[in-house]
Image 1: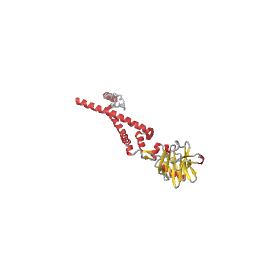
Image 2: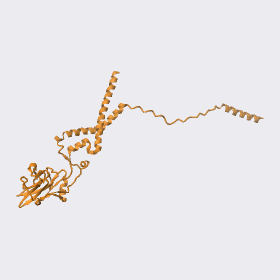
Image 3: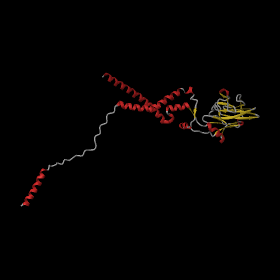
Image 4: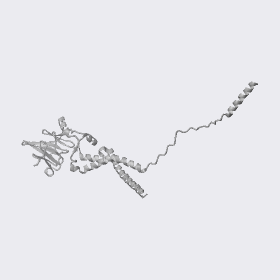
Length: 298
């Protein structure tokens, strides 16, 4: 009996404890999302944006506008400063123009003298003449009674030179027996050398001043191109380098044409930037004055 009562008492206590324990309701907890909405970007101020672009364009155009202004002044004063007479022969600069040194293969030879023309110079032996004679038709050396004269013919002019290359005289027009020169040569008669000139007819002269008609053209040793030897080529080489007038270089730099289409496009961008700078500068000035007047009215 006692044992049964003890067991019943123990069961009653257990039932009482369970009834006194508070019931905890489980609540489902939703996970918090890690992504949060980003705050919307503030609207950009039009004036601030325009001012920023105005500054960027100003920095871009600063150097180029300065160069355009400086080169423009030089070009306006090029003649008085002698820039049109100065020649520039830098190999790097010539490569931008597509120009390269070309040594002539042929020249004119007469009585120990040779004459060669390059793009910009006329070379007698190893000396460049003070005056360039382009496209010569022939070259002869006339020696009479100890006097020596060199004659260079072009299609409309006869140039007289000393043996050292000094210009003596240029004959053209009515001073010549022909209107259009086709060839020049030399005729040996007895102890006298004659200059022969061929045009509408053939004429000879001992001094290049007085002329007489000559019918025996077979007796004329006509001047013609002769292949240069290596020594002559080496003597001509220093005068075969191309050059460009400094004034032309300034013009091409000013316009950007020196660097081809890229340079021209860049200068166009500089011009467009200058226009935009003017427009944006006027707009910002108007905007600033408008805001100042509005504040003053308040």
